[in-house]
Image (tube, rainbow, N blue to C red; front, side, top):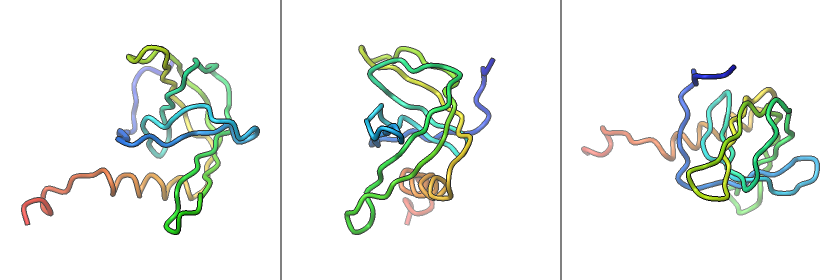
Length: 119
C-alpha cells in the first residue's frame, strides 16, 4: 500500500483542467504535480488501481492550446476538505516530454528565488 510520497510535489496556485483523453470530457483539476505523479481534484471519487488516459490542455505562447497526454494509475481517492470535492493521487506511468516541460515551467513559475528577491 502506498503510504509515503518519495518525490517532492509542487502545489499549484492556479488550477489546470484535466480531461479524459478518450472522451475529451473534463474530469477534474490539477492539484499538484511531480515528475512521477499528480493529484487531481474532482467532483466525484475516482476508481483506485485503474489506469486513466488523461489530457491536459495548456495555453501556449500564442494563445493556442497545447495538449499533454499521459497515462496514470489512480493510487488513492478521498474526500477533499472542501465539500463535494475529492482528491485522487496518481502515479504517471507514461507521458511524453511535454509533461516534463510542463513541470519545469510550473516549477520556474511558482518557485521563489531569495537571491533575486534581495536584488
